[in-house]
Length: 217
Ligand code: ADP
Ligand code: AMP
Image 1 (cartoon, helix red, strand yellow):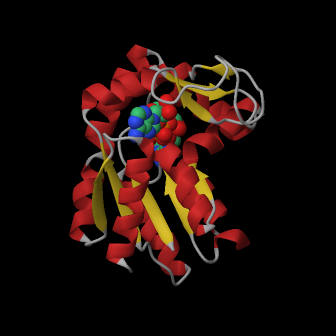
Image 2 (cartoon, rainbow, N blue to C red):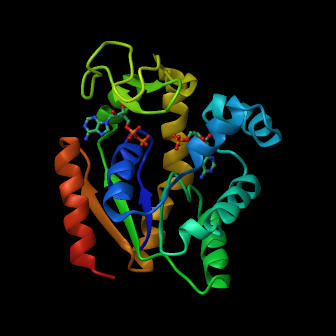
């Protein structure tokens, strides 16, 4: 099962992706997580990506496509994978089609998580992530048991640098211009299913599972 999770920043892609990946036992591939890991480790890729990410811009397609191509060619992706945050441009989507075609494969589902702008801003500016394990929380909607401490590993919770209000506004503009056209792109190839993401996390997850069952590709 090869799935793309589409949606604006803050739609809940990462939150849902963890549950979907657990349920269907497929790897969760988040390009944002891969970039952040590389930034932390100060790799060449991380150094190149940091400038773009800090400004809320997209990392250039050639760098992004290369990391996804490398990742989905690994053995654990043979029976499926879940892409979170990729593709983000039409050019990335075309490249992904090409890479999969060369592997005699294709995407089975594109789940678009729809959330109104006001909720997105609230979600992004209130998001906190664990510095050690990357688990994601929200100060209001999904708070940890102990303030500032990760439930999973006890690490410290911090705000992502790109979750400040100004960068969030930039990221949403970038989404409108460069990523939103993918909704029509995947509608045309008859792969798109949209779920209402403006509900409780568990209800959104239920809708996604029902949608995957209904589509049955
Ligand atoms: P994305 O990966 O799409 O950027 P995240 O999964 O990181 O989004 O979610 C963004 C923020 O919104 C996080 O703080 C998360 O805890 C919170 N969140 C996710 N889903 C919901 C939801 N259904 N209702 C309220 N808050 C949510
Ligand atoms: P995310 O964790 O998905 O919110 O991504 C954080 C940041 O990483 C984005 O704002 C971009 O700067 C960069 N990024 C993640 N995925 C992509 C992608 N597919 N294409 C370009 N840049 C990306």
